[in-house]
Amino acid sequence: MNSEFANRMANLNGTATREIFKLLSRPEIISFAGGLPATEALPVKDVRSIAADVLGRADSYKILQYGTTEGYAPLTERSKEYVAEFGVKAQDNSQMLVISGGQQGIDLMCKSFLNAGDCVLVEDPTYLAALQIFNSYEAAAVGVKANSDGLDITDLEQKIKKHKPKFIYLVPTFSNPTGKTYTAQNRREIARVTAKYGVPVLEDDPYARLRFSGEKVNALKSFDLDDNVVYITSFSKILSPGLRVGIAVGNRDIIRKMAICKQGTDLHTSLLAQAIVAEYLARGLLEPAVKASLPLYKERKDAMMRGIERYMPQEFNHTSPDGGLFVWGEFEGCDINAAELLAEAVKRNVAYIQGSVFYADGGGKNTIRLNYSNASAEKIDEGMNALGNFFKEIISKEK
Ligand SMILES: Cc1ncc(COP(=O)(O)O)c(C=O)c1O
Image 1 (cartoon, protein in one colour):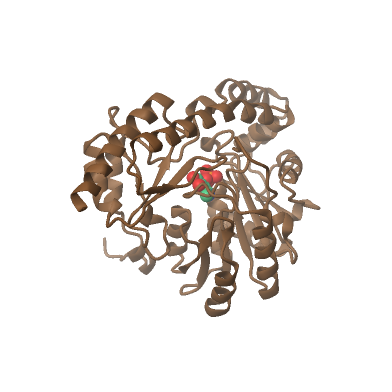
Image 2: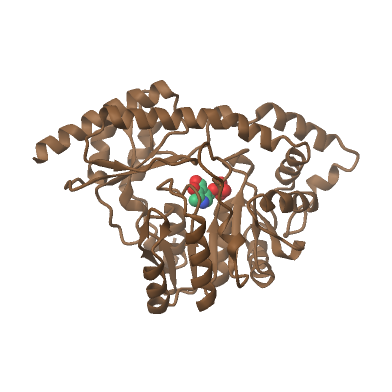
């Protein structure tokens, strides 16, 4: 081969962690490293019968044809009601775009806005794969300080002035990685400050429906003052990640640009997948299925909390989310490098993700993210026992 790869590939090397993760499929390993919805919550039977019905219709050939980039009309219609439950209003279809999962929404926003060298502001820490996408567009992610209410508004305003970001990327509800949710007041403040400076916000909201305790909070988009918030949500965590269907709602001009970019990426989201999701919504199956899955998520989250109390060192300061899939913790005051220790933990048959990969600047060396959705309560207890003993040994050696 004579050609060289694009310069931007220089920023996208595989990490050592990737090699370790290959080991996680071994059955003896209890992995808290993933981010999958509970296998038990995937509605196999309903999707099987809906797929048969959708393909059994007289005009089913339309589903196997090309479709429009903007999306399958019955899904767009149903999605208006769906997003309205969190206060997100779309007056007409020009404000909506069907996307192939939230991941594609992030990519299309980047493709529409970013030149090499541009800045995106993020909460520190934030969703790892979003940081990787920013990297692939040769943009710099800059972290904004956060507190238990959400973003630090003073820091947000200072960083907007200093870095002149192209947009701000946020996961305000049950964040990946922290599990944290911004208060309504914090969302209002973010909407006010970003409107003042005319900065677009990308609100990534895949987890809001996975709430098993606490009060519902409307989307940041519902506080939008200047039509500068683009809202993306996804059916991955509440129906099926394999279907690859999500929705973007926002300013018409931005949605139009994202649609043009999507043409180059995949022409449109699979029509069969869109038709299945539309029918699933039309039959009213989503709400009862999500409701039925919540006790399972709560049981697993509670098992993880009990495991932390029982086994983890007291220096482990952690979140206790009301929903979503993740707990985040920091070994306070400890000189621990979670990345370096991961291989050793995997030898003890337990895995986590080192928190540093979620930081824009690679900080947070003594932090970890734990996922509780994909193991039984018994396995969570066993895994936390192993993890707790492991970190207690490390900390006692350090002292
Ligand atoms: C915050 C966040 N955004 C986006 C995604 C991507 O999800 P999908 O593309 O399946 O909707 C994930 C998946 O883990 C996520 O945690």
